[in-house]
Length: 311
Image (cartoon, rainbow, N blue to C red):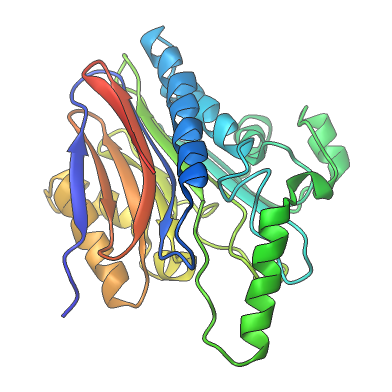
């Protein structure tokens, strides 16, 4: 029998920011130095996002600011330090969704320094929701900062790929490396909510593979009548379970609390062989941080009531 998911409520009324730096089972435990690096990056992301909320800025701005910091931190699997494909390259995905329904997403990015900026550009500059591998010329037109793909590749991620290949070559079960997908969900002083997620996928993925993060309703979702949600973990399972939208539906249509909805969704993920976590900020009330039993998760939250990080 599967164990119950682990759920915590955080913050309260008013402006609230909740972030995650990934959840899942880890092939190796983090060293003390890695833990300190991750905690510091979570703290910087919280400060960048909540500073805007405290100044009266929008939930959208806070989500983007927090994710920018994590996309630049090589301890997470997004932007610099992203997981590498079988070919040794980085393919990045991101999604941004606002409570009023506006949405932008992109997948297969190879040159955008901040994938979440591409998601925002899709939302603001086009009538579309999702772009696959937008051309560098189009990214220039949208004002996106671009870098060479080598910028994203770190020695640690290159070593992780070689270890993955070695274990795979001898017939070992596909190793599970530390997830580091990042996400942020926020509510501002006007009660507006937003969700964003950014990822480099999974180590050793076949080029072209897309997980749940850039898919509206799977890894990212926001609806002003209910909740803003960002997921992390076994992407294929989150896609099949329409995980982020499921949390919304359980709250809006099923009458569950955000904590109950997150727990039920994660229980289904576990029952279907997946693992991972979720962060939720409702249109009013406390936020939620949840993970499947056995998964480890990096997270943080900030509100007028205080702030906390956990690596």
